[in-house]
Image 1 (cartoon, rainbow, N blue to C red):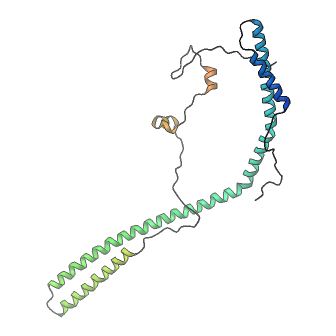
Image 2: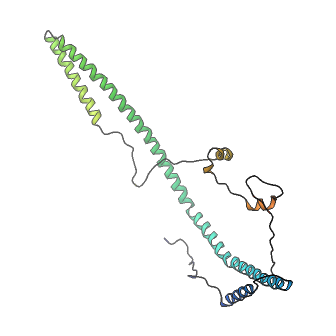
Length: 242
């Protein structure tokens, strides 16, 4: 299926210009010559080299951002187009899946009731068979005339029918859900955090915990210790671009 009318083409790879590569190599060579800083002259040379490096780093970042912006904008536009295009399909898919889920739940209840009825019928028939067996034994023991014989035959027939009914119930296939080919219904876990502190106290492995570098840099100092955090001062030189 072709989704987009326009053709989207990108080069198979990207490469830097010879001019940019030459400028970078020159800066690297200049930086390498500044092996030590032991006097003001060497310091000025090192600062100049570092300043030019920072300038190139900024130029590269600005160029990268400018070149990538149309790609990012195109990506967001494509995402929005695909989302809008598929919105009615996703809505209908979700609606149909909910319908099937509801029906499967109805089938679960139907099968559960049928299984419960099957168990109750089995227990009832088992009791009836035992009662018929007791009646047959009693009739056989007290049989004295023709009427007693008729009663014994009737009891024997009743016991036979009870056995046949019970056997038919045992051999009958169990109730099954109506399933649809190409669809599967399963239980999935849904969750909502009600109290993240209580959750972390009970099951910390279910939570993520990480330090916020920006907040630490903005609010913490070695003179004000924080439990679980080591703080110290350190000198750092930053050379601005020219």
